[in-house]
Image (tube, rainbow, N blue to C red; front, side, top):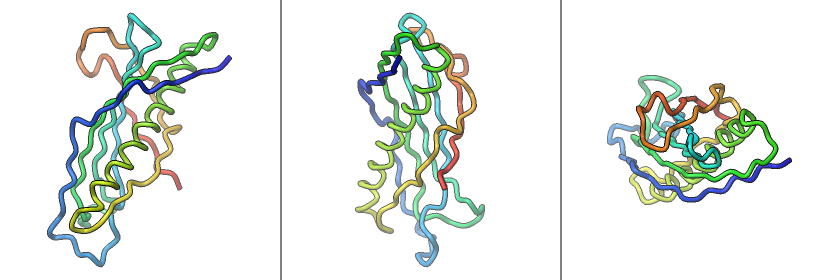
Length: 159
């Protein structure tokens, strides 16, 4: 029994990397991020999944400025071949691996864009998506209310 996860497509619908003119350059760069994950499987086709990530700057020390205001959102569409595996296990693998794939794409995109910005490049910290606790929910083929089709989880930063 094995699971294959195929990324069909992904896109960014929000990318904001804005220089903070009040940032003292002697301070460390981006110290933390807040990541929200939404995961959903279609009810009419359990092999198709959608994962959305929202990534924002979240300083580890409140009141300390960061070099950039960061607000990035992206969506990925995945297809799963998981014959013989329980649905709960499939959901967990899709949630962890799908979010990791999208976060990696966002990390590279932010690095690329910020490299040409006022305070230089920013590399988002690595994250450990295994720490997500809530299982994803199933979504209908039409677009129901946000809360009924997905779960939100916050991954832990890798050490």
